[in-house]
Figure 1 (cartoon, rainbow, N blue to C red):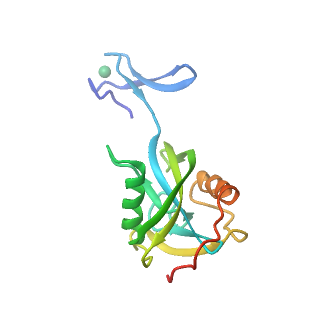
Figure 2: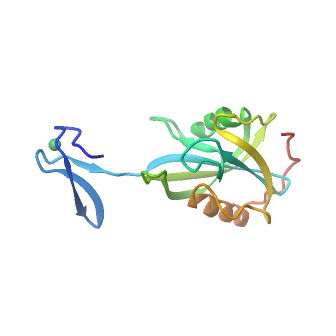
Figure 3: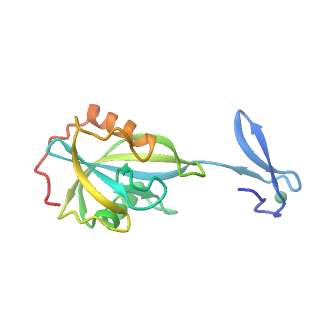
Length: 173
Ligand SMILES: [Zn+2]
């Protein structure tokens, strides 16, 4: 954000209560860089977790969890079902809230707030090629060392600790 949305004059950085703001010195309008909420799915089957290699920037080619940004007015659980339908073309049988994970997105370092769920899917998983170049089931002891975003590691650590992933048989990929 470089220019005022009210009068189009350039914005100046300013510290307020210890947080970075951008203020218009001409009209007084303030830009608050609040985090954007997004949803993430940890899909577990038979002790393994589904990871997807990103086909698009940011973090192209790196392992990520399925999910995406919440649309205006959309409930997080509806956003999760929509994203899973778009990205994996399957349904959700169950969702359990895991927690909230602040992170940064992309080179612009857009602040995000990840809402993570442990999920079970229903139906055949068919990854969307536009979104993912590959999907793979990883054992919890054979997870990759690097992920697309810092919060992925934190989400998986919490998931391993809080939820029993040993459920059902892995669906055919
Ligand atoms: Zn202004």
